[in-house]
Image (cartoon, rainbow, N blue to C red; front, top):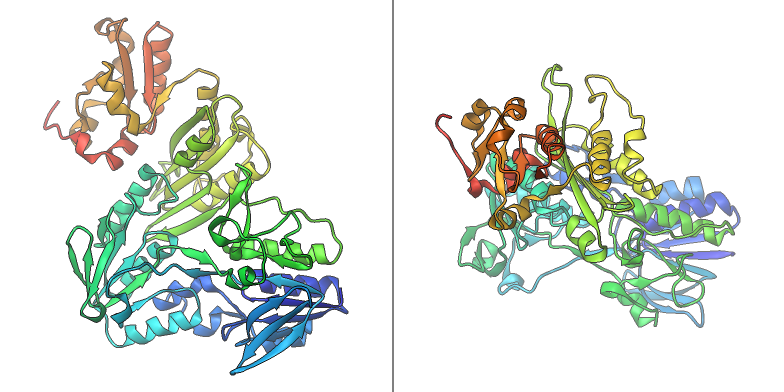
Length: 553
């Protein structure tokens, strides 16, 4: 290994370059970056648009000069690799209109991914439609913002789209969000995303779900949705996903896989010897399902860059795959996920169970905040398939813990054993992660049986009866699920004579704790009962039309 050429900087490429230098002082390392910046914080771009990150220079992680001074890495921005010739072990590079050839002993492709540009009538004539993937994209948007923007539209409600909504809103711009899926943040399940939708609406964001932009008119200032709705838009940001930048690899004869990502083995080597690929362009695997996956996130890209450098230096490193852990802020809420969502888990595995747990800071501590945690797991083994959380504070900590649990092959039976930091400003002595483990363990061991919010209507249609175990004052204040009969939990033991032993019941309260207590009471008396998972607190968020108000009880 005397000469290593890296195509692409930023996360994967620069991690590979700097790690390799620390392991191989005598290696010649060249980084060709197509754009003007070899290393920048692309995840920070939306926050500079709002001024949250005030200095543009804060986004520049490393310069070519700094990389040479410290690491003797030859980083060359504005150098586009236009072809690879594996037999000769050379690449052709274009710079300032001239093309030259560079030889290599080992080649690392870290070409990343590009924004998907949907086919929309009138897009080519639009003057105000942008994507946001790099510094030049950000500069174009900033230039337009400085000319005056009153109404902006974000197309695509993934993590980047939601971040753009918040940051444009901070500039005093009215924002519309258009999403083709049925809910925002499609990687989350619908009931968890519903909390984020409420937060967006609370901040006067116009939501158009299950809709797509069909036409763009008037040079981009008018958008027509597929249901005929028209939106005035001074600025439109397309954020509908990314696709691997794999044309270079394809033209060189490298094997491609999922969505034309580059196939790699456990050492990140492609189908061509001495050519490796890392980051958004590489097909790795979903660690839980062991299936091919593209997970375009900064953390995996940085890790893969470091690991491929280790491989080239002769250290034993294995590409274990990724589980896709991510988080986003939406005004006063955070939403995070790791592993598989419920829909995917049910497609891939049998015996999938789900548990929702509501946790708060200690209620006696000022300004305590609620959080919802969702666990997705195997109903027999307790293997954790995924987790999601939404709340004001501490979401990152809980999902990080659960991502670590998944990576460490812990099960739901291990979650109650986790010793997590506790003090009143940060949480409760029984952390919501511990509580999730308790609830999941009860389900696996048969001490409890739950049904999900989306299953309730079908279960009631089978003849099951709904029991509300909250106090009457709560029902008057918050409403109730249509058709429910109220028996407060504290009166349940004395009123079991009112229940039919041949009737099946579904119980709920506000969070699920009281209904679980009620479930245990009735089960031990021979009744057939189930607990509505997530209870009223979750159900009312996603199924508003099934909640009725009660004037007095």
